[in-house]
Length: 431
Image (tube, rainbow, N blue to C red):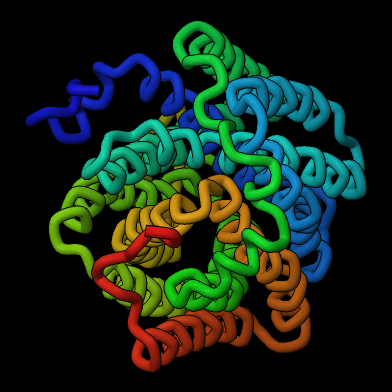
């Protein structure tokens, strides 16, 4: 565990277990971001409405909402390594399924199955990283773990978009299968057996434990925050690539370039912000700042309609031909870069708070599952609702509604903490 001494984020990669866990974040995030670009192509291919496009996000989230609570309990009680391996293998099957879709209904079904695999990987991986990290380094471990995911997401945006642009669906999914298989081997070989999973069955992640967790001011405020925040954020994640494709005809490689703006800022800053939160404390201030900045970035997205007044179209030579980047490309790139800064502020502090609160009840995965449940409720309703608003109004109505949800989440979060601030020193019940 001394690998991180004076080494910061880079020092963590001398730890074989962290490296194995990071490989799961890499595989998961690369797949997620690549498939988001593929969804934009499916929307264009099948000429879907905004409401149906919203289903691409809702189907993914709905199944996660159903399974995340029992899954959190299973992880607290069982062998987390086995759940990581199961999630990786399920993702391989997902890529095979996506390579066979021929109708929009197939896309929705595959998003359901993808949601199960993503829950297994994210919830288990985050809980294990939180549990095996040394005292005083949790923000660094979680921040760096997320930083790997952000870098992988960036790779998915750039290389996934490039593969889709050059070779189409089949080759792209084959590459994702190879990456996921390598992560499976790393976890099997390097991660200890049963990392965590020692909680008392009467205590871990049962309804009583969740009631106790919700009695904590920090958890209650974060749950309410994430519920409303997810409505806005998931609308951005689902609809920005679709907007780029259907409104401006931007190709998959260029769409990946747009998304790379946010992933680049997130991958550059998140680990450093995690270290800073360890030193400063007051996690809620980082969460609040991140929410406000995310609302600003979301409100900037539909201004791409006026990008031609500021940016010129640019033609670049690429892959033996010429590719024209419309003015909207640059506007959307900048907006997504702002969103990456917002996530860097918010994510390490949010995850560290949930892990700390969960430790009071020997239910770290339970706390993370509660965190995920709050997100999934908004994630289920948000994409379809915003897609319907887009169908009935305009792109401005859709994204500015999403921005409004984000500001509301920040306001509610601030009010809850002003009424009953979380204590600086948290006493473990029974001490």
